[in-house]
Image 1 (cartoon, rainbow, N blue to C red):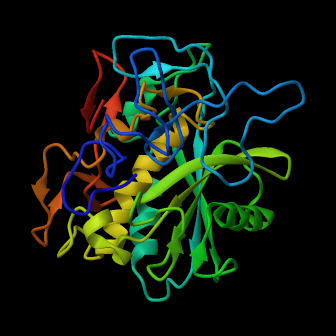
Image 2 (tube, rainbow, N blue to C red; image 1 turned 90 degrees about the horizontal axis):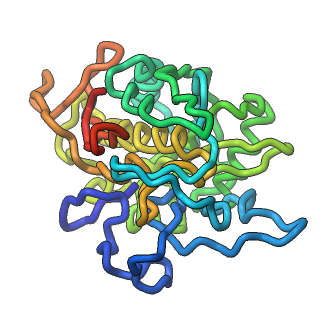
Length: 319
């Protein structure tokens, strides 16, 4: 997920227009399809691996799983490519990376994770299903959080993010029905493009022999004009955390409907949240006169819309 510094936009990939090459790829033609990277833009699918070869994941690089199955085309603007979705209750773990001392983010964002499940907003994800027609459920459980005091330094690579997750799961446990969020303080950079190409991303990797889903969410306090919708005030009086709330929602709904980057996405490699990024629908004034569009767990939030996989497909806040 990312936002252009100079202008608003409707998809996660802001620095490139839909007609421009991405990651060195040539222009998309009518018979070519991109696969998601987890970072909000598509890339050319890799050739299918030969016998005994891996599928290109497990090194902390948000990327596709090789050439996907032929998509099941529908009329809702997003296609199913045969991969799994997360079924049942999705567990959420937070890894607070860096220095969060005295920051109200923990209260704001743990409340979000504890309250988003069961909401009309998260119900949008129930319009997605797997090859057996088993639908995503409107159930999210915030399990717990842990801290990491700069184990990988203040400059993280994609592989460094996976290392943070791998270290944390030694204590948190290896939960294959979960998304582990690495939440970084404002003094931490992610070198593959945080603040210039994205605000957050999700992927999966093999950790302790298991398929673990995880996400990186950077602190918009590092680059408010690029990663925060509101830069002078916000619903909970914490611009960085309030900005992170929408990014977390974005990555969570994509991780649930496309956990291995081979399930639900459109021809340009955009997953459900990408298709509605930085659109917020109807808003109201919160108590401090900042914009908000939903109340969860007694707190106001400004959360981006999500793509409904029904009735032709559309961006919405409820389903």
